[in-house]
Image (cartoon, rainbow, N blue to C red; front, side):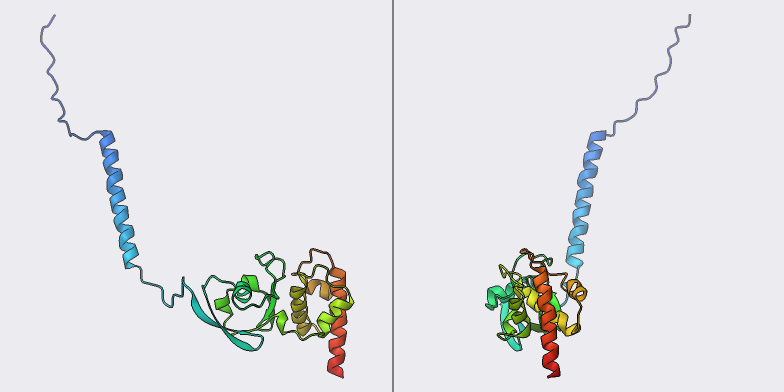
Length: 211
């Protein structure tokens, strides 16, 4: 039997870096690099032009034929500007989501939900509210004649929607009215009275023009 020993392999030098230490170091380094990049991007980003707000800014609204000056934050809706700043409370705040139509006004000749329009974006446009309607006008008179309201909370929105509808459809049918006022909801369910009122108003308005 040979007594010769196998030669010993040279041991590898220790690097001084463990697997855990390497992963930890990578995390710290990556975080530092990432933070630096974000800071550089934030510093390099140019400021947007014509920024308005976030504080209150002066605006001018043309409501019912008169210019009205008011100072509001850019986030304020036309509905809130009218009700909370201008004491025009005819348009009602019900859903505040653009679904019920109780806040309907006419802006630029079109029926719109004032809760879905920013006041600052309504500048330069003609705005008509229920307050502009004269007493005993054909539309509101027809609503009374046909019992087109019960609690009355949705009535201002229906009246303004009817006005906008009749300006584009002066000779509507019952189906036309049903479709044209489909964006306004009545929680009391007086839809038939409302539709009959719009048809009556159409006839009176047509007769007034012919007369």
